[in-house]
Every structure is written in structure tokens, then in C-alpha cells.
Length: 454
Image (cartoon, rainbow, N blue to C red):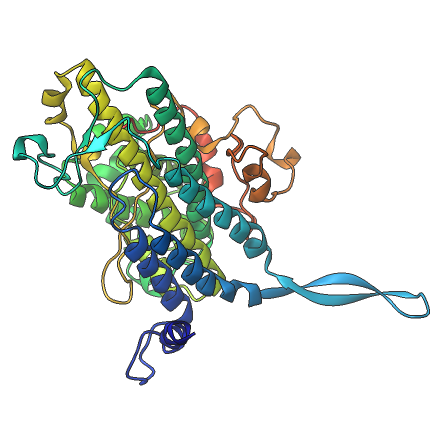
């Protein structure tokens, strides 16, 4: 009880312990609280092993405290009431807001499934990790040197163990896809802060620069060729390109909706061309997100989270993000073991591993407290390289036209199955707005997801 009083006091004070009213908003304080809790509980999940009973109990107890806020975010819905004389009348009653009612139970189930998948590695003896006292030659070298080195028997894993590990990876990947879909959806629904809009250049050319603007507006457009001509050698340059592309997308959208007063009345770009440029920029942005997973959040995402005032959206975004991060971590640790197994079959892989590109060495970075510093998060998954983007997100591009699609359904339906496994059908996320950013992804059916990086 004393611990709960302390936690909720900090939330009510907006993290300003002086009581001077200089704290952050309730939405950001709650988001930071969930982020910091996840960092302290999952931050050192460096091995494929069950969480300790103490950490597991702490996570379940304290995340329940923080999520209970959403039980009181309600909306009015019509309901029938029958009087004593038998007459029926329609009245308005309160119910948890639709997006929370649908997605909070789904995220809770994803949470439980991830912890269950970690429990599956209890008492396994097919692989092990190098001890701290081992020779330096046996420990992991180069990038991610702080992680323990996975070892397998000299003859490698048995076929049964290898298939079991791959099954565990596929299962965790399904959880990761669902968490990513919810997170991307919620971020797309958040309002763009005014201070971000005020910082935008007056047009798309000014945001992109002449060379990139010509590449996007050229009559012949190839997104792969465009990215091949851009310097993507460092994380900073990739993030800079991502920020420029997102800024240009928002500029063009605002101009198409006549909300941008910075443009001159005599603009030479037609509405149709501006819409085409915006779609091309969306394509490039999507390629960036899936080719370079793990890069920090863009200025737009950080700004949305920091200035968001919707407590329900803050909880959905943060909870899905920390589950996404945990799922990515578990997948990466499974890949470490599979990579160690592949070395027993082909030792030459050790040399090629030293020459991996930037995109293959990027690890997810835990979100920092947005009230104090810039935050980062993973943006991708490690799905099999044979999958297309439509497979990755679960869409079938041969479906019926948009107007014939059924209304959005509960993500819980996708997650509920008798054997506890996640079904292959993707979630339809419930939100408050009609058109979503995720719908734009349907235009890229042939895009390939990133290959495993370990």
C-alpha cells in the first residue's frame, strides 16, 4: 500500500516532486511510469531463461496499478432499461472507451504469452552461456560485447531442438507483429503537436533538399533506386532522412487539405501531383522502417508522445511499445543460439559476421524518460526473409474492395485459441478515427521484410 501511494503520488504530481506545478502532463507521466517499470523489470533479459518469480510478480502487480487508470476512461453508449411496469426505454450508460475496451485485454494477453514463452526455456540443456570467468576468446567480441555468448554442443543442436527453437521464434514473432501493429496505429492516431507543425519548412522541396526532391518528383520513380543513391552509412543519416521524409509527407497532406498557410497562392504543383509525391514518400518511409530496424524514433513520434494529452492513447502506445521491445529482445536471443548452432555447421560464417552492415548490427534501444531526454525504440521484427510485407503485416492484397470489408473487430479474437498459440490472422485495431496510416501500407505488397541479423 505504501509503495502504491508513492507511485500514484508521483503520477499526480506529474513527476515534479517540488509540488510547484511544473510537472509533465498526466498522459506523459503515465507513459514514463510504464516505460521505467518495463526497463527495470526487462532491462537485463539477456538470456533465454524464465523471469524470476520476484520480477514476474512485481511486473504483474505494478503494471496492473498503472493500467487500472484505463478502467475509468469511459464513453456514453445507448442501452435499454425495463421499468417495473414492463415498459422499455432507452437510456445512456457509461462503458470503457472502445479502443481501450478492445486493445487493453489484447495487450494483456500478449504480455502473458511473452512471459509464458520465456517460461518454456526452464531446465533446457541444449545450449548454455559462457560464464563471466571464461577466456576472452570464448566471449562475444565486437558489437554487443556486453551480452553473454551462447554456446551449443560441438556437433550442434539436435534436429528436434533446432525445430523447437524455430517454433518458439515464430511464436514470439507473431506477438511482435501484433504489438507493432497496435503501436503504429496508436501513433498514427495521435495529434501532431503545433510546435512540430510550426517548425516545418514552407514546402516539401525545402524539407527534402533539391536532390531528394527531384528523386521523388521525377516521372520515373523507383524507391529502391532512390535509397541506393542516398547516403545511409550511419544511424544519424538514416534518422535524418526519416525525419525529412515524414516532414515532407505532413507538408503535402496539409497543402492538400488547405491547412498550410505557408504556401503561396500561385503554387505550380497540382493537387494530383502532390498526392502522388506524398504516396511516394510514404513508400520510402516504409522501406526505411523495415530495412533499418531499431533506429531511434523520429522527431515526429517523439513529439507526439511528449505532447500527447490523451491518457488512453498514452497507455496503449507505451504498453504496446514495451511489449514490442521485449518480444524483439527474446527473438534476438533465440537468433544468438541459432547463429551459434550455424557456426558448428559452417565455421566460415564467423568471418562474414564481422563484415555486417549497419542495419544488421542495430539493437533496439529502450525508451528514455521523455520528460528529460530523447527516446528511442525498435521499429521492426526479425521475420523469415522469405516473407513479403503483406505476409509480415498479415494482409491479403487480393481481398475485396475497401468498401466491402467488414468493420474492425476485436484483436482478442485473433489471440484466443485453445492451444494458446497466436493465430496467423492479423489484428484489426480499434481506434477513434476513420482513416489510418496503416492503410497506406497495402500499396507495398512486394516489399521484403528484413532478414535475421544474428
